[in-house]
Length: 301
Image 1 (cartoon, rainbow, N blue to C red):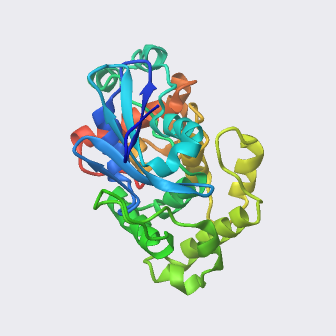
Image 2: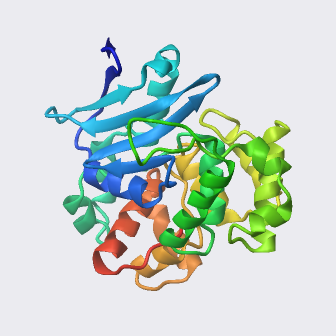
């Protein structure tokens, strides 16, 4: 790690290829305004880890196996943890060659795997943030979900100042959402049922009854997660894909995936996905990418 008067710098290695533009497009299209942004080929976000607060910026380098990271000096004490979180967020420990070997053999996926080599499954920088994003994305478009999540950032994310005009808030705090009146959540544009689900999830996080982070007891955590009214298989599998880094999770019932497979029923999509083990999460990303190449309709994930 290198330091200047106002910035810390570090590098992140990965196994190429890496579909950096596609990764930025996914994160930028689903970002929370004020908390994260994609600007001029760089991923930006605010960071709060324990008592450390600051910002970061990630960009590609001339080396095809390395990314460059700039950090605010305030994050120096948590740089090691931050590196782990960034690797998970950007899926930098994936083996794109092995993934392409499996998925590229499928006649449906073969063209898009060839067109977008090194597609990654973006993770979640913060477990609660990703869970919140998944719930507001239930049965709505990506654009609508992003708008809703951005309202949560403005309402429940502490304000901050950074060198980037796009970064204004820290991620929404579970304790603030848990303590809020249900009507406050509804006023952000949620149905009463969805507001209640978010309220219940936030309360479970605050009470220590839910911890959807990499390395947790996945089966037990997802079982508790699904026991909350309003959490179904799509949401739990989407969270498993991204927050828990399960390479074989598959968002059952996703309408966009069904459409990408020719308008099949969810059960048919699940059957087709059996051929993509142990990389069904990557297959989902490739199918979303395939659909995007032919239509403007996307899932709320």
